Amino acid sequence: MTDSTSSHSASAAPRPGQPQPAAVALATAVAKLAGAKRLLVALDFDGTLAPFVDAPRSARALPQAKAALDRLEALPDTWVAYVSGRPLSSLEAVTEADEDALLIGSHGVEIRFGRDGVSLDLTDDERATLAELGRVLGALVDSAPGTRLEVKPVGFGVHYRQLEGDAGAEIVARAYEAAAGVSDALTIRDGKDIIEFSVRGANKGDGIERLREYTHATAVLFAGDDVTDEDAFAVLRPDAGDLGVKVGEGDTAAQFRVADERAIATLLTLLADARGATR
Image: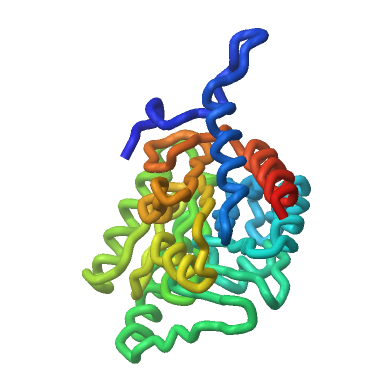
């Protein structure tokens, strides 16, 4: 894993009159990716395509990014997929997905490949654990103004973005303690201003591998901003043509880094232009 200074950053300011080396390197990588025989464009949503908002269901991809993805999706041998920690129902809404969309929800637990859904088939023990987990975390959130409980198909997320100072760390500690009283076999993910507990384990890397298998992609682009996206970066194959792009700060295994959602929108536009020219 590289630290925040050793991956190629495309957001540093160039000297006047000189090209930005990292930006040039990323543009070159995108141009090469555009020529892939079978291309999978897999993307995290919040913080990558869409800015964070206080009302999660109102989030939408930036118009430039959405336009580029629509163009890519219409090209031959090209697939667009969304890979998110959101439950599938929420991901369907914010991406405005059609019936043919490729969606990975709940960090890889939920999968929808076009019109073919995947059943969760929870066991009786998993259902019982899920119910008790919801009870204790619900009580925690009820006692802590500024937090919010997100219900997921196989778990729950405690959001604390509206808290200030050390209050968020205190909520995380209390959530760990409450969940530990329910089960010692939970899958736990610590994301941006959210702590999640699930009764079944899967990650975004699993989702990427399923997508690769389904599309028979010869190259994959994945972009994401959160620590949970590192599982996806870890399964990419740069030597085989895959490209990983980290959005924002933080340690990462991605080859490149960009500043924000607007930079991803620009990257996708460049990719759509180049891919369209090859097709």
